[in-house]
Image 1 (tube, helix red, strand yellow):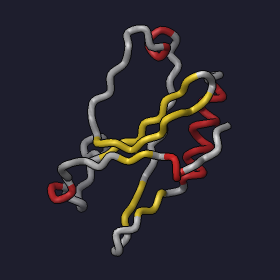
Image 2 (cartoon, rainbow, N blue to C red):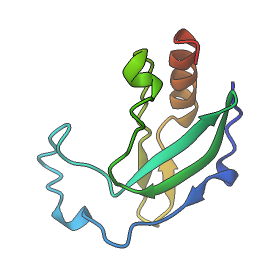
Image 3 (cartoon, rainbow, N blue to C red):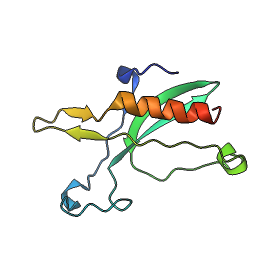
Length: 108
């Protein structure tokens, strides 16, 4: 299980934001997306190179195990900004535990 070191996460902010176009009284699941996403590589048995980056399409190799062996886990992390602009993660330890538990179940 990987230790969570938030000081080692690189952050690339989006050049534009969709926040002004969001109707917060009508948030449809699967239709309203954040300006950013979290990406972390899993290589040689370790999670490496964690980063927050602008939301974008993801590319996969045709040989990716997810296509051949059905191995994939996904976990979404929620973050909120307070009135002073400080960012808070919603239950990051629980998120971290869930992704590790799911990965262990699939022997990943």
